[in-house]
Image (cartoon, rainbow, N blue to C red; front, side, top):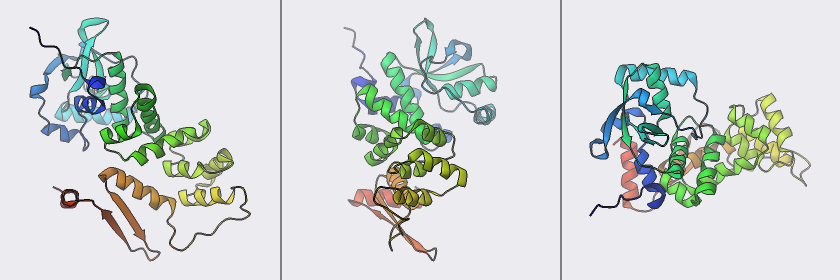
Length: 299
């Protein structure tokens, strides 16, 4: 009796798809320590591999591709691509995850690539492509937020489920998705790097968001200045409010949130005007304390 193939992806949950694409968190070098031998690793001629026409990411920075191509010329492709049989030509393969490596390998004039073949359906291919994109460090905040919304709206995942699978806090997912409520012009400023995610969060409570955003870009305002001006323009406020003693600026709060999301434990930063301060990490058990010790010791 033929054993039925265990369904991947949606059949086993988002974490199963995460395991299938296996993107290392510490750069390409981390993939050197991943054992792919038991996962169907094979080498395929590069001209038998085609990109996914439904790939959500359309822009690949030429400078970054050139840098990756130079690395590939020197070290080769360390992490294999995830592919599936091409629906239009089953003897060839379609990229599920790794199009950037495929493009760079072409520039490096490689003739074949390491791949892992997975039998994903159309829905799973799109989901994996979104997951791969939101894990990339070079995404701008709007691309990241859109990726989270696609995972939730198109595939029915909860914020909690996405946060757990991607190693983020639920509040980080929620705060990033709130940026999608901003006017398109402001989102363009964020995509272009003229405003940071911190600026965008500060604008969420402003009555005239677009005017304040344009002023912030023109004058090079800090996140804190945008935050204070947003407060000053709210109904019932007649002047710029003064910060209370002990208040934290938006940059410090954003840094606390980012660190909390990165290590999965509450981080508090107490910064003094003199320049000194204190960073505290709250842990819930001895296992979490061990994790902190490993992080600080580099192990």
